[in-house]
Length: 438
Image (tube, rainbow, N blue to C red):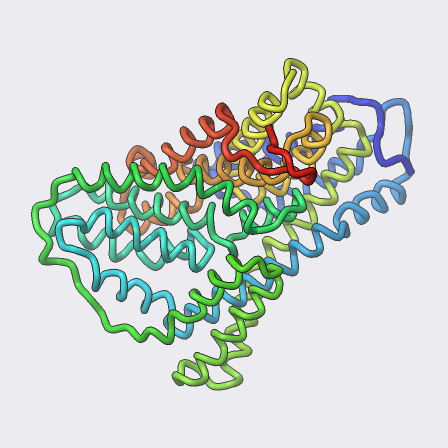
């Protein structure tokens, strides 16, 4: 059957159906997370099977075949594999105490007048090592909020510091699901996106640290230090070193999993059977996200076949006359999807194929596109009060999610520097012919 069709708005409505379903369920229940994402996607997939290309009627078998072809795309399958490996790594490092050891090590070297900047840096390092913002928030929320009374600062401010640091790693980490989704969707290397993102995240994080250094604190006696063993942090160090060396992401994660397993056995964190159970737990954490990726792949394939993607590109690029305009369109698309779904990984997976088409049409370097997708999705994810990150820490501290959003300074600055990066063409990659990508 045809892979594409004449442009029509109707072909885009499956993703709109998904967004509306999420929003309506959230409004009715007064909880934006009430509707399970996978259920909403399955409903959207069912709706998509009712549609047809313009001036053409397809059989149900043809539509299902198109859906399965999209879900089984080699990039989607590789993405699923990487998600599962990342989940196994998360679980093992938590069980061997790598997360707690890293927190305690960082706390032991923080100068007492720099507690707030230090807390932000700890969150940045933990999230960069773990690759998960929610995992970082779960680990550090009690520590951060526990300092509020002793320091004489607002709990919401401390919550904003933790969320900001968590989003730093979510955006920049080599094993973050957003990094994996962005790089795989554009077919670029982890190190390429890392270099592009670093030029955006570094000034945003430095300014955040400077701002936090000027926040006065009343007391520092509540800062507690725990014991740590450097061997437990080794898997994080290996992951970072291997990724910086440019190794394949599957190999990087395999090395991380293997090292965490060996260290867990050496330190007695678990028995051999316990190690396998820990891996299974991590795989289970990522199963839902994996099925989501498969389902989105199928829906996007149907939207291509119905002409919806063609229509969207025409609308987004109607006034676009340059590569810079195409980059702003990509940023706007992934931002709107994140605001609608409150999930930065899902927004990247959904926007990735559309962004790839814009790359080809307007000559956008896919390395820049991967960076744009990750930067803007993570920026909004760290600000929306109904996202998992802010909802989690607000629940722990008994805070209003909106009050936490007001103190999420790093995601705000990440957005600002993301816009500036597009405006001033930062970074300028070197093309295959050796010339600057200008």
